[in-house]
Image (tube, one colour):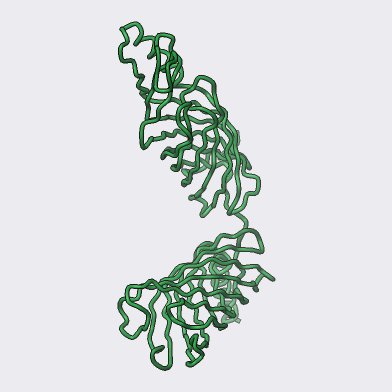
Length: 389
């Protein structure tokens, strides 16, 4: 009886941590494959098959080893060739719901060709690919993937392909996988009432009344406070023009500018600052989720230089006043994007933002911004109740 109690206690201790770490699992599967060989190998495309085993370090990261085998012939149909492949990969998983996962892979593949010359050599290649799992039950998933393998032929003297040439094989596969512990996926993370700091960068697309749309870099940071499905958004950004932007302003004291004999003056600038306030909405609350937002922004052109050659002191002062009035305005903005919640602390995102136009501003029409960035949680933005009075 004492031994039975000890055995039950030991089993409970072992089982409890296993249940608490359900993200860690072992995947085993088999698959059929289709091979498309590089034209420099003079081999016909063929069908094959193999098996894989993977260890899920977490719901996001797996380590995988796979083997594949195929038989083919050369394009002249004169020689049979076999190809054996062993690959080691890292797999980044992106759950899309309770029954589907997208993933990206990257790693190393060793291909062994044989058995007869000139096809008796090995290739060491890097590989990368994309795929998807569709869960048919808690333990069984249909897996579809495609990957490419590349190598520069400059080492193996037995390889008949020309030295210095980049060669690559493409492989597509379909099969079934069995998970000994069902992975937890598609449930996102506890991101409500979090306080995030982030950074973003991208392209600022703008035009003036004398220049068409141009692309310039923009960088900045932001502050995000999340609620249940919404968030308060505050950002500071600055566009750094690669070359001076040129515009013209109306000035009755001038007899002409670069656009002709009119009462106008030329203005040049290369910095734009933007301060943004708004609200974002996250409707789906998944690991990969779209978001959108609206708000207002204050945009300021920094240190514009007005061409006032031949001006007296009064005219120069008036020209400076006019260009300063046209250098700072308030705007409305709308935003849309996609966010990947890679962990409870780290989010990565890509977004598009458009600001409205404003009259008498040096930048004309709508301004567009394409950006990518990261957000890191600094902790909860909501204090819990520790005691009651």
